[in-house]
Length: 235
Length: 184
Image (cartoon, chains in turn brown, cyan):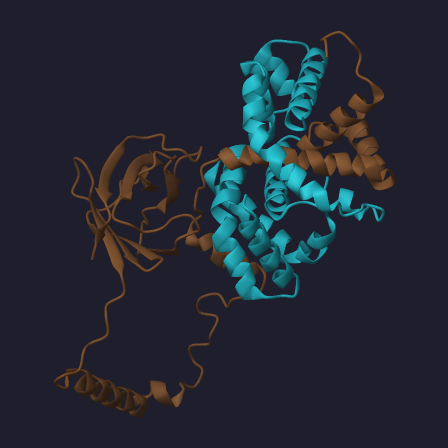
């Protein structure tokens, strides 16, 4: 294909299908292309094929975990979850939450404890866990990452975040692949999440913190200096 | 994407179409970091990307029942929803939606599910990077920027210092060359 030869009709169609899939058309061109999709199955197929072909480009993007609140917001918007305080606090308490319930609970715990302490009884094997202690450079701040199975918790153990910067948490695999952002060190409370597919806790994984603008790296890749890094160790 | 993962995602989407919330949670776990990256790549703004990601999953929940007939692989369907929603948001900073709905093509009743098509497309995927490397750097960069950052012809014209019409014909030829290369 030389730069000057006009496109053949088939090439014109392919180029138009690509432009539609990419969102490059405006106004009349866009309306015409959309009409064509609804009337011409061959052209519609070309658009789908372009979507399929180009989606491969997204494979090169480094995954970035969204904060846990995104999932909560989705559940709320779909009516899958009750928002916090959705229960009326003045509602009559269930019996097991009253004093008798507490007493029954204590007795049950005592019975279980007595059972576990009986000689010859083995306590259940602890869940495989990992942890990392992240001491932030030139700062009082210390952040702990704890893993219980695939559940991860991030907690600030000492110090506090500056008001104008955030710390982004990165999961670094030993294979040299791009670090995966797993969220921001929370300003209050702890961050809890389930690890996404492809992130598997192991002793050769490193957890790092980078110093980022508020809200985290705008690009999905670390933009600020790495201020803490640590291996995962068995806990 | 390997076949096992593809089958697993298809199974989750079909369960979601029946209103299965556990399947929806599992799909979110498996794909949200990638889709968030797509939103972030286009929007370059964390809060807006997070908001868009929410809209994307709401759309996935609502349109899962139409997935089976659209002829896209599951990951392409998900990525296309995330990208289109993000591009529309990006353009909305200026004007109005410009993307084709991800299931528009699927609404054509005569679309035949092509059994070989999925395999052929998977092979093309693998070729994509190889073929991008064969394009001139500026061409490959422009294709990436248009897909991953939502760059328009006007932006490209400015970036490459060329008239819009020239840049359009240049990108169209780059895309056709890419297609010829991947479908060899």
